[in-house]
Length: 348
Image (cartoon, rainbow, N blue to C red; front, side, top):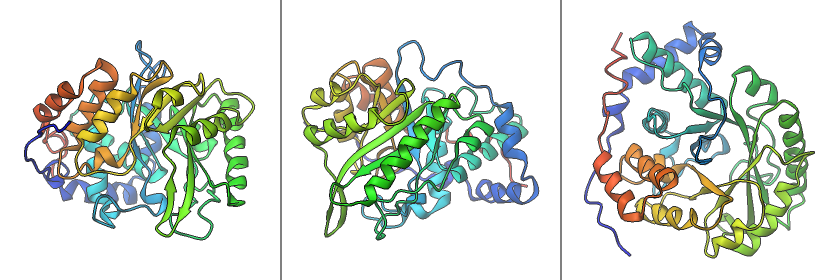
């Protein structure tokens, strides 16, 4: 079914001006201790999920794995002003639950949070769910891609910044011995995080190598198999969440484990309505499906406003929106709060 969302073009620098981007570097140079101070001062949630037991999290870890393409542009996610501005566009929303990122992104968010507070505003990271991405070393397109080494957050750094959880990715190519190394590393990370009281979010993806690179096998049979592997990683699964792509027959996937699952939408389609439709269907698949951990299909949704798309998906997850209701929400929230940063952060 086609949904009409009209014409709109989000301009990132109207929301995230270049001078704010430049100020982040100034803070890095002159006030390198500010991130730890902000992390210490941040008010955390008492527990990750609210009363409805559901979550919406934005993924912001793509460039660290040599992934810069979105849509037809091969390097758009390599433009840090655009990438960070789009991430901030979603994270500032009090409705959206949180963000997952690599150290550089998480640190940039803390710095902008500091700049907003310095200008008299209220910090936007209080009570957000903040997850640290751990393994990004399986760089896209390189010979060792399936050996996804742990090159980002550690258990100690996640604890030091008082983040709310950790995320790892487990891609399984049954024809690559390198996947075995990644499984062992992920299992050890699950154990270490649990001993430190850190919830673990695992993104298990069955993949196969093609002439165009690795392709995720988005079918229920393969997803069920890798879910079984992932839930048994480490010495306990009591703090394990899964991040699983949507596919046909998703109710079969939802029955593969009692661990809570968040849906992912994959690559940006340039039109947010297919992702919204998939998530509306996925939320009905079973009690294990507890929300969405979404990335470029939200912060790079073609020409649309990332915040509007995020709020539409948030409505699907937390309020049970139908697709029509979600699309209405998207259209109504385009261009909302475009001065949320600039009204507090002024040019030097």
